Length: 379
Figure 1: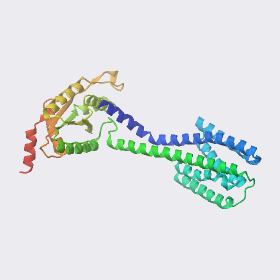
Figure 2: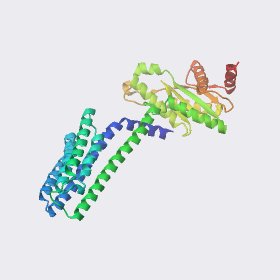
Figure 3: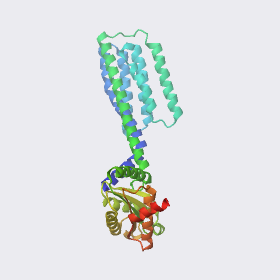
Figure 4: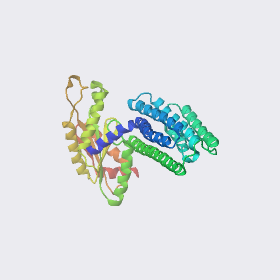
């Protein structure tokens, strides 16, 4: 269980960084686009020069310079929005000029269309800026279609060159779109998984939270009804926890909670369920354990907690701190229909008895007492 606890902690920490990860992913996409732009437009320089389109070859020299500048700025982390503006300006301007110069059929307008989804996913700080940018790009593409599509090109290229450019540009635009959508789909699925983890995990200890334990109980209870497997509950409460907070501060108290949770997790099976129930209280659901077995496990947990040393630089004089815990145990027999609240109430009653008996002990609530409680409820 300790491995699962560490995985939850890493995933929870990762979830807190999901927004920054999405932003970094976008700027990596822009850096990759700039690098690809340098390579592609360098090829266009040679292509147009060899076909006698000198003016458009010079335009592509300017495009290479813009993309190279953008790549430099993004690599150094300097003025990323200027670099992004260079990329969008180049895409739209080049699409217009190339379509006007060598014809609509060459497919350079594909890149202008592609600029619209890029603007949609861009990490704009203000929504009005995004709306204005997307609207402007949309109007530009429509205007380009109206003004250029039906015009004869200034320089007519050989048909095989036009066809080659058309399918090259179509393939490149679709590849960029697939990569961009796929990347953001992966980010969304990852964010969903991380948000679910945050909703079901205690942020301090990385254990399951109360909601998740209720869900786990429902699952195990349904399985118990079909298989007859035994279930048991253990409530664990750290002794004198308020005094620890008052004496050493809440940061030390948090470290105590984390250390105790790690100790409990390290001494449980992967099939058991461990959650932070609230405050300094933990709850454990043991699958396939009778009351006697649960008492023995609780005693092992009690000893493990008592032997644990809390190490933190926050302690005065760096002196190690030890804590103890009291455990209340109850069983959930397969022939007894009761709610989780009732089973927890019995474990809590046993825990209270343990507190009254001096703490740092294990107290049990017998199954016969449970049947008597259910029977009394119907009298």
